[in-house]
Length: 137
Length: 67
Image 1 (cartoon, one colour):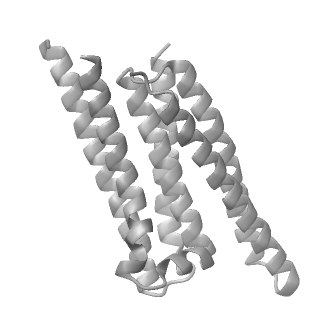
Image 2 (cartoon, rainbow over the protein chains, first blue to last red):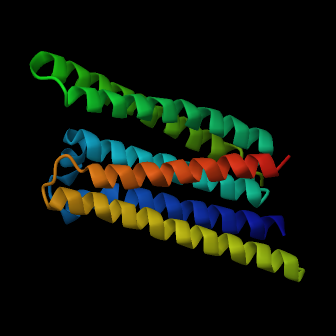
Image 3 (cartoon, chains in turn red, green):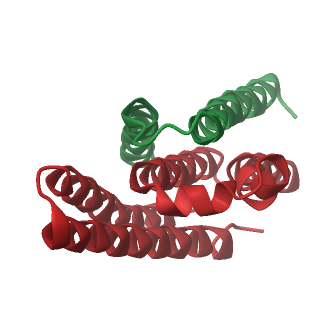
């Protein structure tokens, strides 16, 4: 029973992970230079980060509902995701503020937004690692 | 395995399949925006944020229900 439950959970996890990473890993094969375009376009990159955040939240909820992770683990993962969420919202605000100014000030705000987004990505990666390490066998 | 477990796992597979579809659709939107050379793509960003907000609420609900 536990094996079946965990197999389904991990299959789902792998499928979701594939959905969100296949495009990233093979994206340049489909559209040459697209990965660079995502990195350069602040709002598109932020959208990708939001999708990663949503996928991580969804998988955590599914694993918890299936009993594959404990409630405490889910709360720990949510803590990491909350950090990422705050950083993503900060990045979005910084991008919005950058649109209102020009020159050096604009570049500075966009740079801060990129830093916030990258830190959010690190927090999402931490959440995924925590989640994967705590799946009950 | 009892029928309740079968239903539970079938629901889980269905949920994950739906989720996979939504994620794929969002990724396709993002790729489409790049293909069209749109910059910035506010609509794609809004959709991605809405997806993340919804899943965040779902996780909070799942944690509450697991008490």
